[in-house]
Image (cartoon, rainbow, N blue to C red; front, side):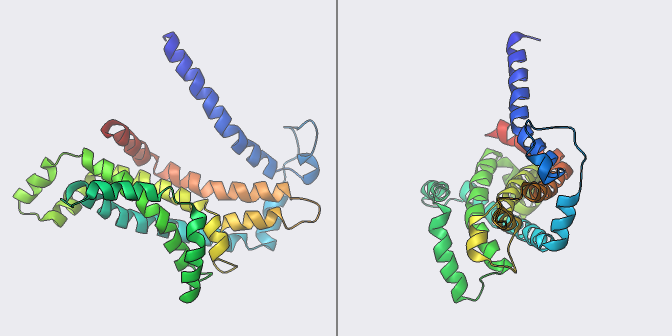
Amino acid sequence: MRSGDRVRVVASIVAALLFLFPVFWMVLTSFKLQKDIFTSPPTFIFTPTLENYVSYLQRSTIPHQMLNTVVVAFASGIISIVAGTMAGYALARLRIRGAGFLGVLILMSRGVPPIALAVPMFLVGRAFGLIDSHIILILAYCTFLIPYVMWLMRGFFKALPKELEESAMLDGCNRFGAFFKIIVPISVPGLLSTLIFCVILAWEELLFAIVLTNRVASTVPVAIVNIAGDTVNGANWGALTAVGTMTVIPVVVFALLVQKWLIQGLADGATKG
């Protein structure tokens, strides 16, 4: 192995450790009693307990909020993929006047602070009676997920050869047929990787969840904030890390289930970009 390769391997290992250690520490802390958490110096040898998990699963609304998070994250992700993919294809393939400028506007919309949209979204939701519902939260998440999907898929479609669609249309397909029968199947890895990122962004979102929900549609990030401030003597770190671990596990499992397509989609994006 050349010295340059060794440096890259070592740098990759160090970066992975820096990223994974906080996650490891969170999981480890979730199995500790409160007295073990504040032991100095920190100890790695202790009697593990499920008290933090059991107590909050029994006494709190965490299961309901976890279900809300799953519903909202996947619904907003799927809607954004459907709408953003078709819009991205239109920008990449159709002859639309000002398409380049429109693409720049879409990219710039990602720079709008979420707080600038939260208050108008609350007023609209209140006017239509949608506050504290899944619908308003899904719509709010789509406002920042759809531009994200549009921009990613626009670049992906522009990298595909136009001959694919032209051949399909010569065989009798119209533009929609070529898109759904040829382009979409080819783009499945990219679509899945984009869907994963959309789900993660929606899964961890906090601002809209706090502003637009109360109890019925509140999500796990809101629960974590509530747990952090529900004690007089300070945050219950055992409960916080337990809820944090339960929040991470579904996303990790989902990513593992589709890792084949995720890796392929990332590789395609790297080579075609």
